Image (cartoon, rainbow, N blue to C red; front, side, top):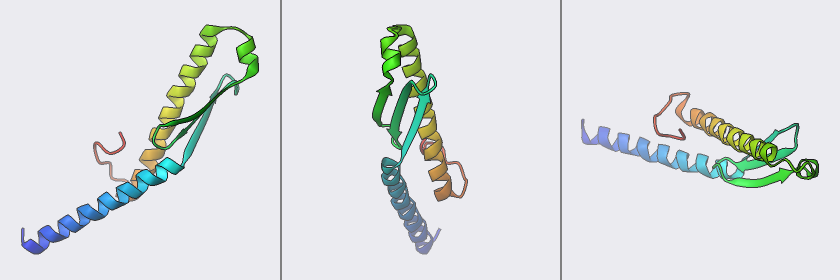
Length: 106
């Protein structure tokens, strides 16, 4: 490969790295919300999988059912992480034109 070819490839790699940084910054600004138990537990996370808030309905707390509370929280946490992963994959597909690149947001 000629020097010109290497420079072009290097420039493309730099551009992709810059766009990837933009996507990550954008994901930090986006949120995903899920609920379980008919809305008794709500979890909000940003696009980087950082949990922003957890809301537990008073009715669920008053039920004094630890096992149900734990199950609903576990379900909500698993679902929110699944939704964040889907969000990140959607954002990445815009950068890569739908091409799946192993290791990026997987």
